[in-house]
Image 1 (cartoon, helix red, strand yellow):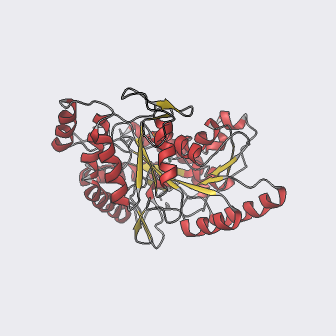
Image 2: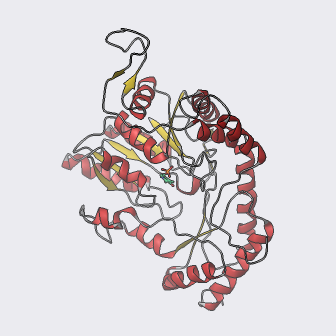
Image 3: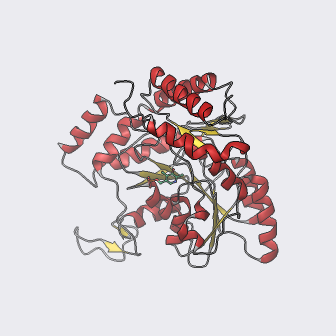
Length: 394
Ligand SMILES: *Cc1c(COP(=O)(O)O)cnc(C)c1O
């Protein structure tokens, strides 16, 4: 690597064992619908301490399956965070539900439980309570699930955790996904996420019926299970019971995912080392570093920094300066309600001011397994210069 090589904000870490696992699956009898997928499902469920895993070809598909399993339908209401990738909201739209958002906490950038409580109180009076709430564990730090779960009991909604950033993260000492505070939890295995299967996702649940529902809908609504068939004329026979999708994960993806899962603990350890190094190198900078709440052990998917309010006009120039220096900074996230698609559904700029203000001032610094100390120093030096050039740093 030379000092000018491009440093992305995130990327996969693939070693020889990962490659061997995929090659082995390529040489096996099954490229899809074989043993690796169920092994991967069980391994993820075991790792996070839950009963069932349902693999899918993306977290987006898994979120859709989760919404369907919880009965989300036309004219239902689903609430999520505006500070997320669009998929957290789109999954509800696929089911014909309307989407609304709950603004974020200004320190964790996660859905604010106090705001959620206020909104629920109002919604109850208007008879517009949500059917499902989808908290998103932004950057790998769990939301305040105990508070959200408590509200779900009071107001009667289901919870899907969008844990796309958060496999390996812990909340109150337990792995995110163990199901204590939600019905279903979804992980993403996209290459920029914590572990990868190239594309891929998984829905985790403790509820056998939800697991069966999601599995069936991931394979065209087909069942072959003898207890569900209406007749059994022969071994060729299967039945379609519902309108499902082809959301299947391949054997190659599952083989890669399994191999990556065995590296998860090391990945999280390395991310924590990089996080600590950035925190130290940046401690005197006039910027806000990611805040880690007590009782959370983040998987540290991202390292979002925040410029001071009075310097928000400089964000673009600082972003451009980093990119110019081959540092792949990125912005997480453009508030979902400001997307033209959601504006056309009636949302306006100003609807969720904390997420919007955060968006205008944030930048994510590169953080991924394999990022070297030297590269972190380079990122910090370029950032220091950019902040100085734009009057943020005296
Ligand atoms: C990446 C991501 C998704 C979608 O994941 P895919 O596997 O790419 O479909 C959903 N929600 C959040 C918060 C994400 O970051």
